[in-house]
Image (tube, rainbow, N blue to C red; front, side, top):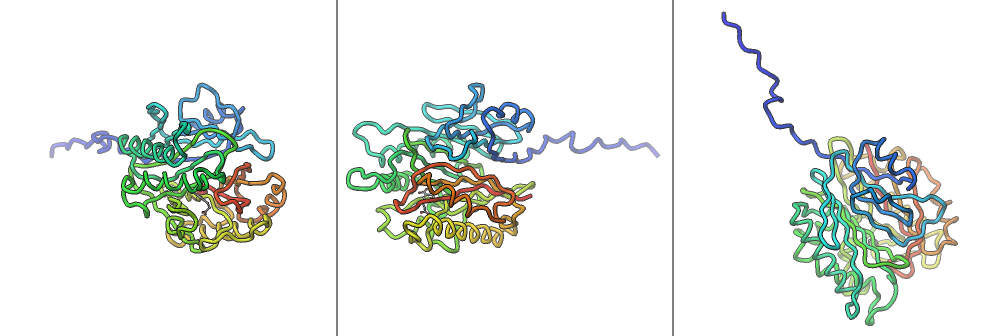
Length: 348
Ligand code: 3EB
């Protein structure tokens, strides 16, 4: 009987299957960034600075926000991939891609004679065009920053002008609008241009509402002529872990602001909203985001620095046992809101 050739392992005949890259976010002190990147064997996808310097050798999108950090850590918000990253630049747009995911940033000055509404529409149209062209049409998370958020412009609050511009760009351009809208944040900076950054992908993520709140894109029109275009959270699932990207969450129940003038109770209502959202995500996806062991990275936006102590005390609870919290001074999109919390929660 002739000896049969031993088949070589199948794998060597096939192109390597590309594993999906893993997205990570960490708060890193500026002085430790280079060492941390080398040690973690990850590749930077996007870096958000709250004033701390970013080494010039970093080639990924970098955005610096005029949101003073409360407390004394010079932290950077560092988004990384465990797979190589390619950077794409085009005028005022910069994007980084890694496998099935993308991070992109756009900063636009408000031109004289142009309102924030037009600037926002222009920024979003360019951003959407760019990510669609690169093959990453599905939005996973969006952040929006601009100064004077509660100031009046042409008879309408600038946040409301912004909402009109964003709506006009997304409606008709984002497939599946408004249900395909991602988790969002819109916070007022002290100064600077309109600054947007997004995460997007080659495939859709799962967008969630909060059972205690009306979808923002269904707010009644007394909050503005066009509703705010965001979901309450977006869930990303990979073979390794599940990540919940949580929108800016405030003391809003249904669609109404609660506890006007009271930071201590606004923060409690906000935490109740977070609990409800985490439990809802776990119900839908069978995840464990609501457990204290879940690894959270939270940003807390505080309108008045003198409310910091009370807010910090209220957040000393089991929900944040495995979490890191960064406090920033920012203006919120309704005048009466004093605190807002966003987060990234990861479970294994
Ligand atoms: C709210 O729940 C509070 O316009 O993108 C939170 C997160 C808020 C995102 C946005 C607004 C936005 O309506 C405000």
